[in-house]
Image (cartoon, rainbow, N blue to C red; front, side, top):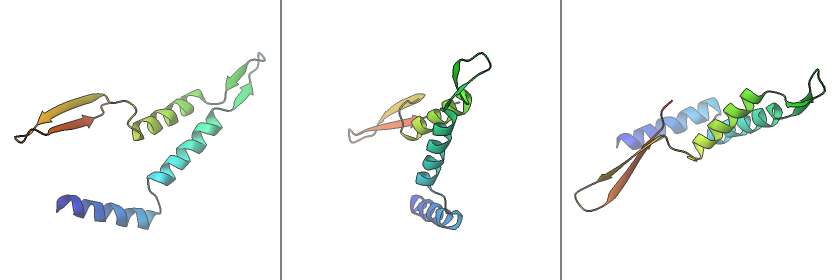
Length: 90
């Protein structure tokens, strides 16, 4: 019941703000692509335009895809099912 209410509120917010996971991921992809452009520095070396922005965009995309998990816990309930609980820490 609570999960359903949260889901309804999240849908309402996405509709109201016109933002959802797809739009955020699209923005991250744009930031990553722009930040990873190669430019020539004063010494003539090819360098990434904004390494830190590219790295952060990649990190956020990876987190969304659950490519790495900082912590994981396995719980076994009474009927023999194993429940995996994952969370990330900063």
